[in-house]
Length: 139
Image 1 (cartoon, rainbow, N blue to C red):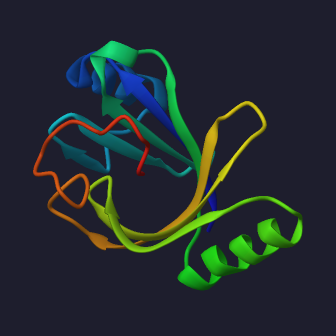
Image 2: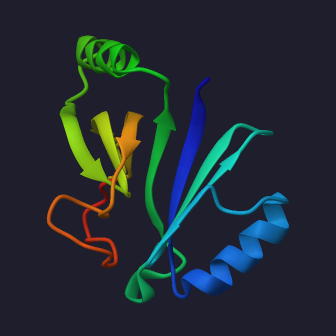
């Protein structure tokens, strides 16, 4: 199963969770301090909310969640073969999960990731413990 991911910066995580729970008709699949994600079955969507009051209402990043590391590697090869610059990451801790991923940036600077979740993690990123997200997207 593949699904598109949209990661948004929000002013207040609790208010955003309340709104998106009503909008999407489901509760978050994962919730941590300053972070929540919704795994929506129909339409296939991963909505990520990252509490960053200074940039609230803006896009954090976009992505495509895939099932396996092999799919991430195939995407990296496909994008590289098409002449796009990629930034692959393996076994990285991000968004309270261990992931394999590849990053690519669109012509206007919007960051996209193609990723798979390998395991749950206790921290948002490699050097953080339940703190809000860094300015650079990691999910």
